[in-house]
Length: 269
Image (cartoon, rainbow, N blue to C red; front, side):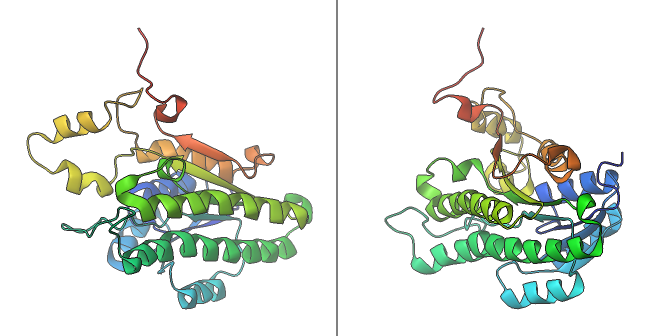
């Protein structure tokens, strides 16, 4: 398992969920991992378990990104995974297009849109630095932005989240084209997970005896009729990070159990 041997990867939002799964998968493939998160306590525990380094990072803070750039000036892989829905609290404010407050809109975009922009900017510079440290023929940088199914379709009751994830989708393509035009061997792709079983779903599923029933109802319209697992997203991230994917850039890849394959897709008989 050495597909990422001798590569250094920085992963944002790596304390739990999809970010932690990607960190584990990258580590298993031989990469050196810098795991970052705003939750320092959980992040350090996760990093210790994986065998990764930990660095605190609020992706919405340019000062934090400047500190990270000083600590880790040269990298091979950056995964911009950190994100929020804006609906994390027990009684979240309205997030529909009519009633949402500007402050709540901006809070979601500060993490998701601004955080990904600054992560890509840092990644390009860090990968340029890595190219100076190695023979040009052996350098292949990979930026992986975690968008969402919600970046491909409208979500009326989570308007800011959907808009921010759509921004990530489009910015990925801008970064890919920019790097290609610069003659850089830096690829940028986006992954679009749908219903992936992470702690984000806990407030909706609860811990009662009807949890499994609730979960089944939430994925009833998914052709594969189940939640995806973080490891299934991580498997795709490993491919995109590896030198097996050196002709893939500006691409958007869904991990959604087939839900975007049709407007009302159900398993066939």
